[in-house]
Amino acid sequence: MFSLILAAPPSADNPWGPALIIGLGLLGVVIAIALLISKLMVVGNPSEMLVISGRRSTQGQGYRTLIGGRTLVIPIIEKVSRISLRNMQVGLEVSAQSGGGKMVPVTVTGVANVKVSSEPDLRGNAIERFLGEPMQELQRVARETLEGGLRAVIGKMTPEEMVEDRDKFVATVMTEVTDDFRKLGLNIDSVNIQNVHDAEQYLESIARKASAEVRASARQYEAQKKADADIKEAEADSMARKARADRDAEARSAEAAAHQKAESARLGAEQSIAEAENALRIRRAELAREAELKEAETQKAAAAKEEARLLAAQVKPAIAARDVAKAKAEGDAALIMEEGKARATAIETIGRAIQAHPEALKVMLAEMMPTAIREITKTVANVELGTVTVIDGDQGRAISGAAMGRARMISESLATLEAVMGIDLRKLAHNIAGNLGGDGKHETPAASAHAASAPPAKKQDR
Image (cartoon, rainbow, N blue to C red; front, side, top):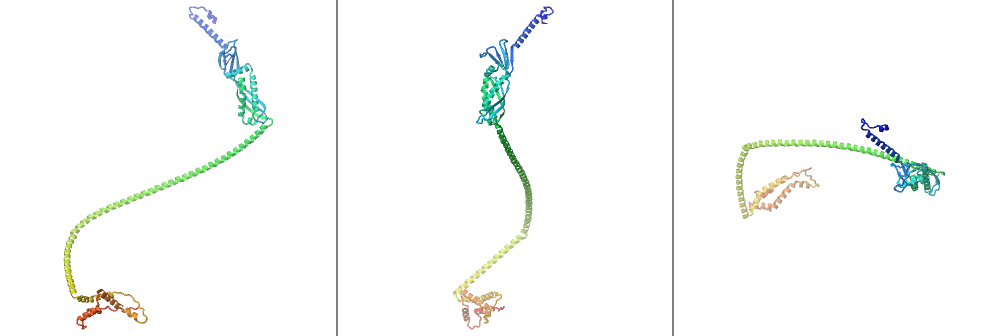
């Protein structure tokens, strides 16, 4: 087709002929260059390392490496080799005598993951040792290196340490072989110890012991858990009882509070009722007081009217009668004053006469004696002796003594009168009798005094 187009001569009907020919020629050149580049370009995967040898690199090496990406390779001059960077599992099985003074032959089996290092400083070691070698050779070298390190570690540790502390065992193995792997250009990613056993069943006895300890620990743990569960159950039961007690206490408290509130309300109501009743009583008292005051005012007004009428009807006549009585009393007082003055004049006259005639006083007293004796006898007569019991000693004197009692009372009264007045009544009587003529026919005042004796006391016998 292309030959026909190129061979077709230009004509008037096809004006784009030369340009089309040039374009197609350029397209063919581009395609040819692309095909050449595809043949010369090498693309590397991230999981492999490309070793391009044939030319000396800038670092003076006769190769260059590429991990991922792409590069141009000159045919005939350069050669491309590939080394895998994927992990490889290496099986391990080592028999050796354990250390730590035990010297027990043990067999250790496990698996290790190793790979070619991608670090720039270690790539050369792997290229120098494994470039062009099959993968089985790399695995063999890695396994022998690991088994040597594992054997060295077994000779340093006791069987108990290998069994009980696998992490330490693995870390020690990896530390032991890391330097050897770096020299080989390899990395050890992990080591997994699958089993450690011995022909003398030393580890089995240890395992049985450990199993017994584990079972004992398990039983102890179970017992402890059961005890803890019992304790927790008891605590839960106690907490439940406490919660119930608290709820009951709260209920009782709420009930008591409600009762107290109701009682307070009742007391408040009673107090309110009492206050209302008291206020009602006070109001009633105030109303009664107001009524009384009004009634008192009414009565006072009525009394005022009555007083006015009384003043007109009684007070004024009473005032007139009082004035009359006052005038009469003043007249009586004047009369009494005059009588008093007259008596005073008479007494003064009698006093002057007695001073002139001292015997006149005795005569006056003698004249007064009958009156005095009568009064004395009245006094003795008024003495009530009541019932008198006379006890006689068969001589008759007790009865006569009781009969003479009133006479002795009169005699003693006269003696008392003579002592008070300082007058000897018998002598006065004799003198008066002598002055009268001494005939004894006329009764003298003294004789009258002796004659006016009290009647004899009546004899009263029981």
